[in-house]
Length: 216
Image 1 (cartoon, rainbow, N blue to C red):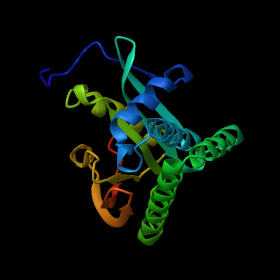
Image 2 (image 1 turned 90 degrees about the vertical axis):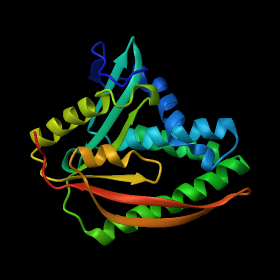
Image 3 (image 1 turned 180 degrees about the vertical axis):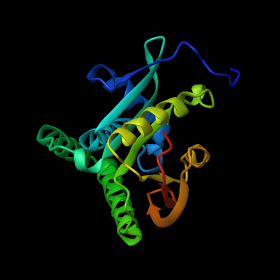
């Protein structure tokens, strides 16, 4: 495929009917194979990641091409977050199921430690951002075609409507940091966590990117 803009893409508010495709998209791009080998575990980790983002989300948009999801963005405005006890229960139950398998227990421990490293980094920075990009994914075959920029523009508009002046996102070494830079984000901080599985040992790197001014 040539990297040219596709005009037939439609953009919609994130709905329940898109959730299955979204979990598939997360599984395809998040590379949970770094932490787990079992296919069921990897699918459940993708669903867990999605539910955690959904619990925090105040704004979500999906990009559809021929009725299939090819991109998504989820964001959070700190002061507009509302309690979601049903999602909290679903997350706890899914963690319980993942924890029943040896592969899953190891993966959850790794992800817990990575999350702790992320929170320590955020606390160390002591940033003033009220907006967060929770998730921004575009299917590999549709990247560099304007999908990500359109999705980001819609979230940025939402941030402006909620009087958000600063926003941030957390990326890892596999993220498309060039896209973040193109939208005006700058790298502020880095954290490194050593990951050890039965077959390999590697560094998981986290980066704090901040947007100091909403441009819309």
